[in-house]
Amino acid sequence: MRLSRMTDRRSLPVVSEREAPARRRLPPWLKRPLPTREMLDTRRLINGLSLNTVCVEARCPNLTECWSRGTATFMILGDRCTRRCGFCAVSTQRPEPPEPDEPERMAEAAAHLNLRHVVITSVARDDLPDEGAGHFARCIRATRERLPEATIEVLVPDFHGRENLIRIVTDARPEVYNHNIETVRRLQKKARPAARYERSLGVLATVKRIAPRLRTKSGLMLGLGESWDEIVQTLKDLRAHDCDMLTVGQYLRPGSKYLPVERYVPPDEFDRVGQVARELGFAAVASGPFVRSSYFAETLFADTDA
Image 1 (cartoon, helix red, strand yellow):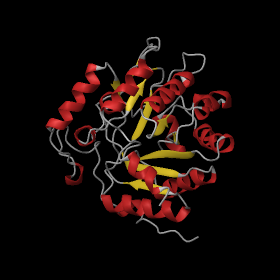
Image 2: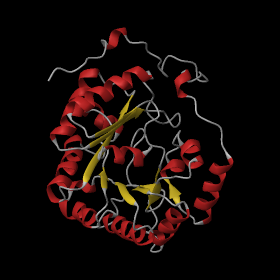
Image 3: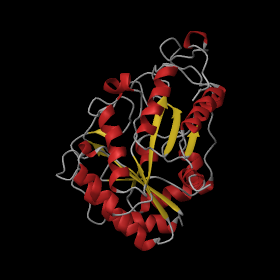
Image 4: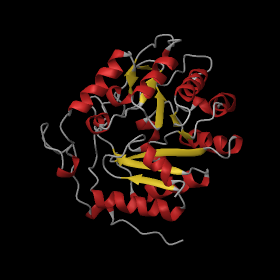
């Protein structure tokens, strides 16, 4: 298969945090909308039920837009992570024990928002014997009980590739099993030192082997210094491990202590990445500067049936 090719990196326009002033403006394509009343209503609901969302904890730039649409991505198992990734704003601390009533509270919030597609993610919980897999399963089942017509997507840690833990989640029968590769092979150690590129690919392959009907999904960040060839190879690797759905977005530095942005990728380049991904056979692709794992997740899931 002949793939379209991006211009050589040396000729691409580079807008780097390393060279720019500290208070430099973002490129014009990275502007977001102002808060709305609907966004505040969603915030009150989330806060009232004492729930965490990845929208807040990871400082997602899409919070205003998504909460204004009355949707949010629930983050279970607390707001303290046992891993320290170079790109992620979630706090790395010793976590608190899981809250037994969290699945019911989360399901209540999903019902109040009348969600048709519920996205559930978590911090890494390497401190727990099952790394949080059982809690994921309880959240899926509680949501299914409150919203039997809704589809459910989980965005999970790698569970160290342990098939018995992956199976706990797949046995609860979500519609989408999402695990992010995050970046290209060369940058894995810098971006997420506790993870492994091959292990993440293996998670996706394991899901497909034990639950073939379940759709698998992964996400990739651009702007950390990856080359075009590395991007294409990552897409090929994901497809070789039976990944069905793909999200590709711009890495945005959440603070000064995190990895710098090496380049802001223009929208047309995201379009090219999306085109290549579709040529490689992904059933559904979202590629753009503000695309995140759960951004318009319902629409992307629907595309797999198109």
